[in-house]
Image 1 (cartoon, rainbow, N blue to C red):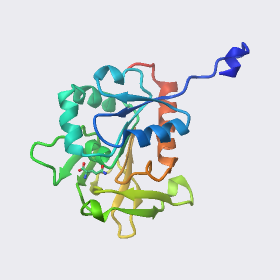
Image 2: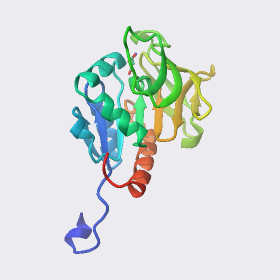
Image 3: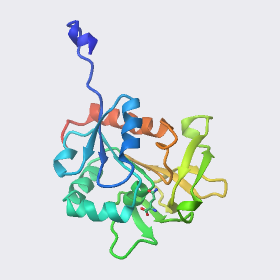
Length: 215
Ligand code: GLN
């Protein structure tokens, strides 16, 4: 940075945000995070989790991501990171992976867990029934979120520690937060909506100042 070249005080380095890159829409999240000034790391092996300030679990197919995460030895380190307070943002399949309980899972499907919610997979029908909603999300201000739903899940139960951030007009819960974990049933990254990623970066910045760098 210019300040360093000038001999001035070093600016703190960009936040390092991992994106679980086993399957799914990794590139769209990279674009959103880089636009917000973060450095991104594609997470495919346990070593990729070292020194992250936050993590995105992208949309895709949750049962495939689950299987691959076990095959690549990522399941346990990811769960350890979640338990240690790593800020994580899960979109769509990523929300499913953070849920403690699933409805309509395939046989043997597991999640990383952490969020005290029950999620019903494919709650809005098939791919053809994808839709974009202008979703009010009070904590992000008056401008509604451009939320893209693609074979999206729905939160059918939220535990007492879970903060419900957004509901569709019919009352269905589609965005939640609990401690270090943020999850949306929809994809903001597809429409260029940046405010949810900015929320992850806020938690990541807090964690960096309060936690020594090591997973
Ligand atoms: N239906 C997918 C699943 O169960 C999620 C779809 C998505 O991430 N867009 O994993």
